[in-house]
Length: 140
Image (cartoon, rainbow, N blue to C red; front, side, top):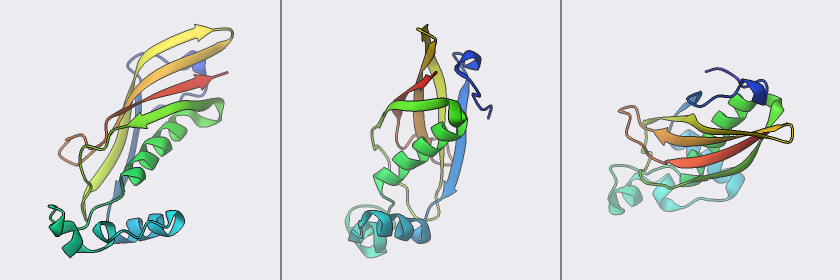
């Protein structure tokens, strides 16, 4: 992953990430403690199975935070996230490796600033996308 140290170096096709985490109860418990989100489907395998999954599954917003971390690592201190959105389309179950990635799809330069549009997503180890989204990042 190349860090965008300034907006002048950002180009279409630049890759964001990877930001990778193995998911499971320890990660979910820490996230739940910060957000007070102790929901049974995120803590208990039986509740997860009752919801149609093989185990308990992670919070969608935890995947959102992985996207945020990938963008922050890529931007460094020279950029700021203007917007970030995603759709939760797949659950991250216990033991799954989730990776946040992205690719720059647009670059605009105006008034001494560079704005990049980035397609972002989280994916499972098999490459299936769990949470596709879009971000807008501004440099300068």
